[in-house]
Image 1 (cartoon, rainbow, N blue to C red):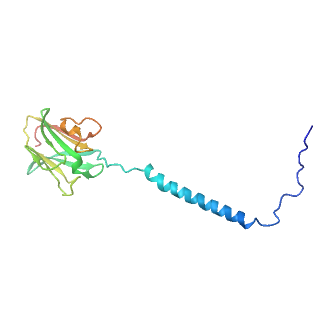
Image 2: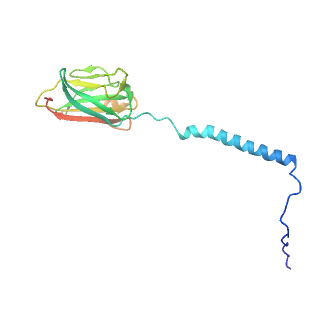
Image 3: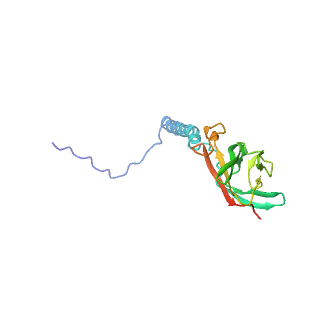
Length: 177
């Protein structure tokens, strides 16, 4: 048995009257509910897509200078300006650690000291390190960024692990002339 297909109308469908007000109201409320739902989803999920991330000071560029006050290592540029409490500095003479400053990166320790040149408590281009040197030694200054000052990486002499990483290094031999 064959079922006959309905024949195509000769005139296209034309609405003779407007839709009932209940249908129009239902469509409007459905659209409004959809928009409100999308806004609520955006409020909940957009902040989770963009979490706050700590600033990373990479790289720290250093320069050796000879001034009237003695030799010093000057910070030339920093990738991002970060608080001094996130840094430590290691002063090495002839492959032996002489001094470790920080965190926070402040003050002096024996023959090695740090000065916050612009007094903003952040590592930036106006800051410098002073030290005592001799003509026959080799020197190295490492700037290390520490994520958490209470981490176990601080007790180690080298910067190892995910909580500590070297962001600036300067090595030279002898005193600058």
